Image 1 (spheres, rainbow, N blue to C red):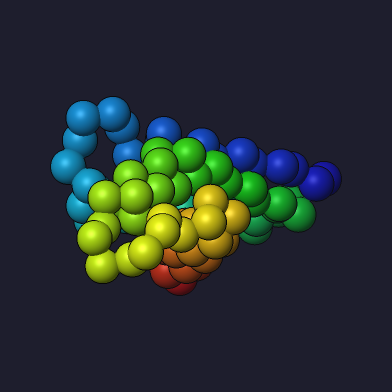
Image 2: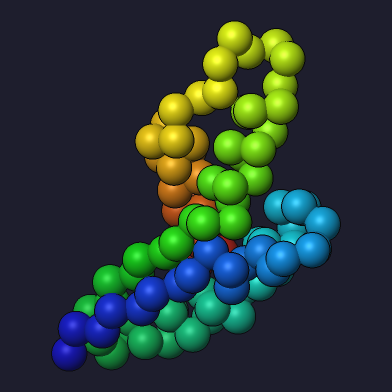
Length: 93
């Protein structure tokens, strides 16, 4: 059976929490165990959101005096997608 697992960005980082990578990575561990268990018997497709993460980068970029204009939103989306994807891979290993 093919199963789609959708992991929201808010599942990793909640409003008002410190923006620490370890908090988000810690939240991924039990998810990764559950996904690994599913993958033992099924084909799993994992997708994830990145709203809070990209929002934080956009605010930082907009407030950074070292850049002449904020990074484009699409670039920040790609950056956070790659970061969260990397964290998921590490948690699965």
